[in-house]
Image (cartoon, rainbow, N blue to C red; front, side):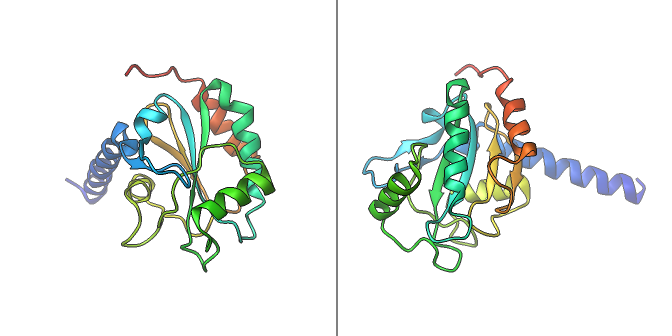
Length: 187
């Protein structure tokens, strides 16, 4: 086998493993809704939806993206789309508040109605399982607050965008619309 073929086979084997790990198992995890008590299984709660998973923070230069994320959620919710917010204090302590304070801030300041889940770690050894899986599937962990991962109806990560990409970015919107055209998978 020549060196190029060997590299290609190693790459394809790694990609296949990542894709398998990122399938339906990606979301088979339990998290509490923000300020809630009972955990919910993300795969069950969001079955068949196209999801934009975002690590959020209330005291960040990108915090105004909450408004655009809510607009996306409202625009496409009836077609099976949801934004899932996961507050994180990983980047320079920009989400220091309690879950109750975060919930109040998001609701009162930006009118957030999209699902928000418990405050989590998104990077490093202490990253929550969801963010470890997202990073493994894409090769990219969040580098800052408001990193976005797009998950297809069947639980595959189909794209990721850094913080500076706004929720109304044409490429991001086109990717969401493309994924919304896919049929809802059977349970």
